[in-house]
Image (tube, rainbow, N blue to C red; front, side, top):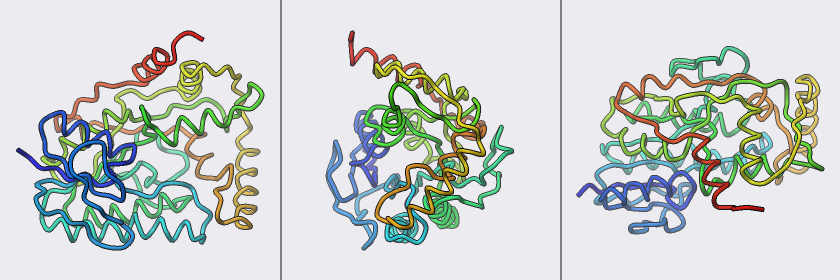
Length: 307
């Protein structure tokens, strides 16, 4: 029986990886501050010490600090302690075991030219601490010979970030989105979990992970709102206005470094420009993504039921 250590197994992505691995007969070590949904808990604080990986055959590193903190804030320092320093500790503890390191498409350079992103797209110019620290952490992982997965906008059951933020921004039946409609890659958490469990046998390097077909932003948002029973009209905020509001929001955020700004340049960049991942490299390794946004919204609508 294979023993898989999953860091961050109490979190959104990590819990799906742990449950999928256990369902397939693996022995699962849930490595992190809190117990995971299955298997044995191995306590670990990524910001302070190396994990105990004894008995593990494979390591899937999902633990990460996420968010969009104000530059130079304590929150940014805490993010670096987990995403960069924690990675160094994890790699040292892995001691030659296969490591699958879950990164993010946020490492890619912002702006235009992301209509079909391959893994050799520039990794630079990050607009927030999350992109910077994930890029620095994955660089360590790549240097150590790990397989690095780059999903984008992971969604699914238990999502604490993406869909809740969309729903939270509906005001008086209206939702403002920056710029016009664009094509965007999204990643079903089930598709990411499949990749995490398969990737330990892939050649080292970076792999984009996303649903095989990109979505139109507005259509995807409307489908999510409808599934959750939320009625709202979408409004397109001119890109220049959205960018200016983000700059002001970040400046004001420096006065309250403990809280994230309501709108940032990173958020505008991710929503207002086409961002489509080329997943052919992962497909070439035999990875088969079977889940789609339609499956997710259908499940949500059924769960909520009439009314």
